[in-house]
Image (cartoon, rainbow, N blue to C red; front, top):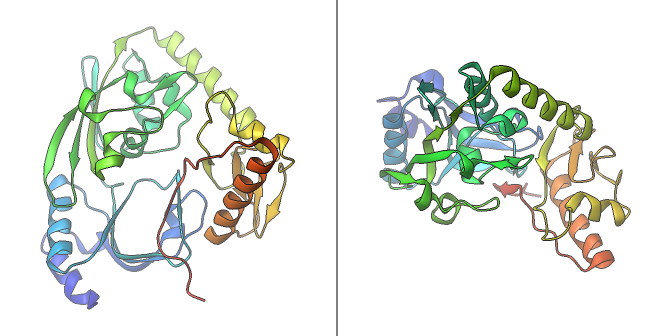
Length: 306
């Protein structure tokens, strides 16, 4: 692949400083792992995203979209083709009791904006480290709330560059899933409808949730957040703990001693370490409980060539 030719085509619309070649992706993941992207682009508008997709199609290049890298593991061999970072789409607009937010905006920032405008409904998101796009993609939730409770619609794009607006119903949001995943759409923007509330009550609720998160989660180490989906009737962390895996180490990663549902990077761990640990946890938990743990974290990219 002649990268320079592709870059020149991209520069027709994209600012040169927003295009990087052979870019280390571990700079953009919460686990601090991952190989390089052939081309890494940060568009700042929907039109720029469409242009990148057109160039990719003309050059027969695969495209991978990234949010803020909080619930993802990128393999050590990196990602071929073009990686589109959505972190340039960060607008947050408030209109009465409605908030429109770009895909790359942090869902935490959206919850804080809601608070500042005395709007209630997004308090649950005050500690979720993902982007708006990622939150809609997996119907993110915490402490009894989830995206589907407050979303009105989402503007999405497919890999052909076609944009469409999906209503809440068409998004088919359920526990950690959505039509976005099933159809491989990409969120560009989401609209949330909230209710007027009391500022002190909203702030108090956010303070309580923030304290619970800081007390129970291993925020002092890099991690990809909660690794496994919650099995019906069980808690993944408790199953892992009961299997005797809390504190277990493979390479540079460890099953957190603070919360067994997290795998933390304690000593320059790699994506390969993470994959080996996930497989080991699944095998051990199944042997001890008969329950199959399903990863919530996405694993993408190429394995490292030996």
